[in-house]
Length: 343
Image 1: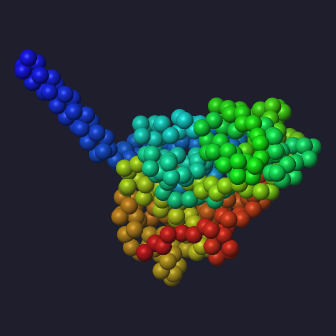
Image 2: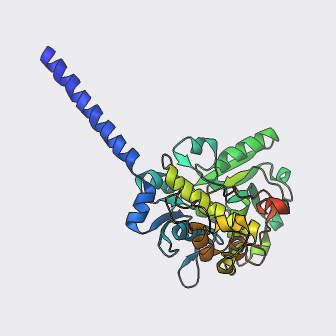
């Protein structure tokens, strides 16, 4: 009997050690090293969202999320073309990070406490958004109070469900929620008149409206019912890779603040401004401390331009989305966007 007990304890101990070894191996894995070894940055992007990640007429994906992926590849590998794009929904996106299916999500997900402590890390906010409601103009709904007793379509498992429940309860409004497996299905159900309204990030609603041939038949109500800080996501426990993603995005913001553009970045390397010199890697060793070349920011800006250029090209007033900067303007211009000092 003692022998059986001893064997049992030994077996459990060995299994426990095996688990610890496996965990240690996982902990030692370094995404930045993997990216360099593979020669590619694997980005998880949204399935289809105009202005953020959608196929153009040539069948190539373009948008805000794609540009960020290109900037990260330029910073980490020196080549913005070394990217692998994987369209993902919410469930597959979050599951894909720890398993290595993707290295980073440039997908449009909200930074929340539960996600942050649940194994996901958000290096920096790239988009200050907020949730709103789209309605058909003929519905005569002009404010959220007009949605009392409305049927609301949304994505199952998203933060929208909680936002609807909290907002409508606090304002003593009644509603019926209808959830779908994807945001696309929720939107299609709304357009198909299966519900009175659909909730999503306001930029997401603008992206979907931009694709409709009869977009003028719809509108987004003026009220914003939540704060939705959006940013790239990496797996927990990868501080080097997290820092590379953070300071790549930061470089695009800093470039706009300093007047560095895709067109003038080469000439700006001769700038006498210490801030510009540090940004572009002319002085200092800020890149090598991240594990990349000192000109990582120069390469990222050369690839996609500064933050303002990325905005204007993909979602700005002259695009189908027609989004004004609003809270995403630089702090100097009354917005919330600012860079972390490079010094």
